[in-house]
Length: 144
Ligand code: HEM
Image (tube, rainbow, N blue to C red; front, side):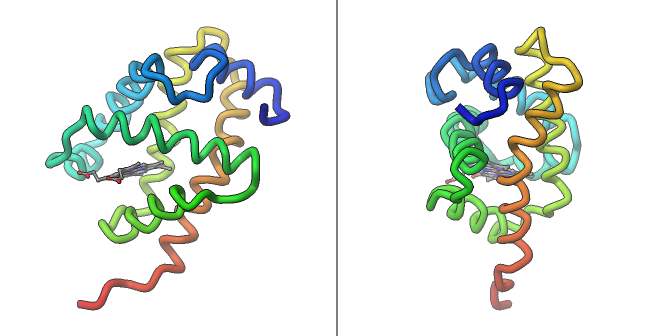
């Protein structure tokens, strides 16, 4: 799929042969949020959020991150998500924690995940995170 067999094989062990959009991927994203919300400022950011809806949104949006890695083209949906995070004031330093939480979930769901596989996941998701950071930096601040 992506041209990196370490990523592709691990992705298939975690999500099956689909692209992560099926309901079967839900426990993976629930695990991701368990890791992500361990950090207090992150938990505070989600204090008003319906986490069932959030899991479902991330399950859908995750596809756009992986698609960006494969196609080198950000989808309109990825741009919308990046602008939304800028608008609600998500500090871009949290994207590192986001990636660490994702890796913790991968290690939980892929028993064969070793250091090289972890690097392949980090490599695959970095373009999307870089894009989110870039749009955050380039977007004008909202008027007071
Ligand atoms: C590449 C990484 C990320 C992706 C793909 C992502 C994806 C999403 C999506 C799809 C939504 C729902 C958008 C909608 O309502 O239409 C959302 C909302 C949100 N995200 Fe993220 N997110 C990411 C990183 C982060 C980070 C690092 C934080 C830090 C705290 C964060 C905090 C939030 C918050 C607070 C909301 C609003 C929840 C609500 O509606 O109550 N996200 N995110």
